[in-house]
Image 1 (cartoon, rainbow, N blue to C red):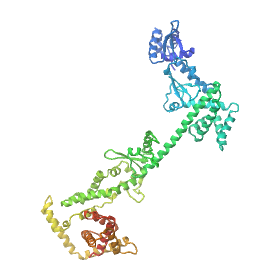
Image 2 (tube, rainbow, N blue to C red):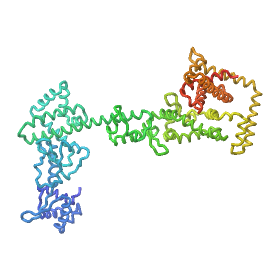
Image 3 (cartoon, rainbow, N blue to C red):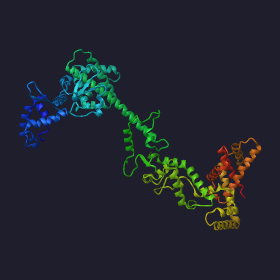
Image 4 (cartoon, one colour):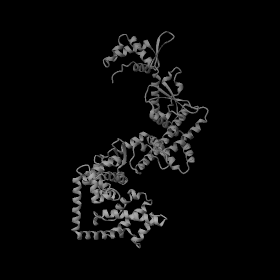
Length: 635
């Protein structure tokens, strides 16, 4: 290592060599010239001190004086002198090295610092309020000293800022260990600890033995062990009680009490820190549990509002930094071919959401169930407006266009579902799902490594949806002649040609049906058989279709006026008959099952005419039963 050339370092070396904080400027300049000649080859920068040494030093001292690292003055004889405060800092550093090697050396006291010592180099701290702050935010440097003040009349100790609280704890434990090894101190303290903790005699004996024979393990236990906190609390309390009673104390006894104070307050600090760590770990576990609750997806603002089972906010039991670290860890990929524990997706509006990987399938099932009716209603209204104007669009005829329409509706009306299904993690999830067998109720999300079409996820059939939409049209739309006449005036393009084509098609269909009377009879027989099968599934054992119809009728039609009740019933029955009459033309026996009956009844009950009737569930049941009765009696 090259010889130093910095003036502040050279001043500290000089004061250390001559063991004095105050030096005569002329003597130092003579020393500096000799030093520069001796080490010039090793460090050429020392050449500045060979010529006009005094003025060069004075120029450097002005800078050091501005930084309060040196103070120039004159003595009684007129000689210029320089006071170097770092002399005392260096001496304290050496003192603590001695204490580390020989625990019997007492701590340096504040009285060893001269009264004229610059206040900026000596920062007072109170052990009860400031000392533990040094553990996390303390400055580690040899530029100044700390003066630690105790709560009673115990003399304050001085230590360099480079000595950390952990090091001071290590030195304090060494002094306590030295105390326990003297005379019968160990037996005395051990007996008092056993009296204060009955039933823990073996634990106390073992811990004292560990503390005296294996210091490193004892320090580790003090920082992390629950039982160690209680042990050190009692031990420090007993020692302090015994020695504070003495009026006259030796420097070694003062050092012991000072060590007890340091140990006691750091013990409390580590105890509180362990409790906070436990609280933080528990809160982070509760945070994971919160992600498993509906609605399963949360943004950052919602996560910050999570609370535990008592309603206490989790943010506060852990810090923002802990939450950020948790999110960062859980969203990091554990391996290139595996999704992280916590998945992230964004909507088109830039909102960022988090969802557990294990809850992704339940989330999709939940979202599909929630938005199915909304998407169905939107498409129904859209098609209704087109059909009422005698117009059509591609989604009514083409399955591909139908899928695009559903996707577009989901994009606008169900942005969460759309964002999840189009997220970047879906292909990898398909690989992990091994063919798409996911979900608890056999819900299938993937097929051949791809997400199923929206129509399958939302269980929307294009033909059924189109049929249900046509049912909502006014009755004259089902009458060929009237429909053709209205269409002639309302269709925007080629109304005459379109009307002729529609009429010709309708007539051709009727002629074809007339020529196949035997096929119609066979189809009706199959429909009656299918209706009987649905009846067996729907009617409870021991009851009949007529009995169930009457029971459902009484539940939804509670009009006390017999005439009004009969009229309302007949109106509803007429509406159902008209509805079935139109549907039966396209109805196939193979698709006529309980689910189809429920869909037909739901579409009819949701029409404006029947939505005014209360007791919807009873009405829905009645419509289902009446549809079965009509199909059974079809001729």
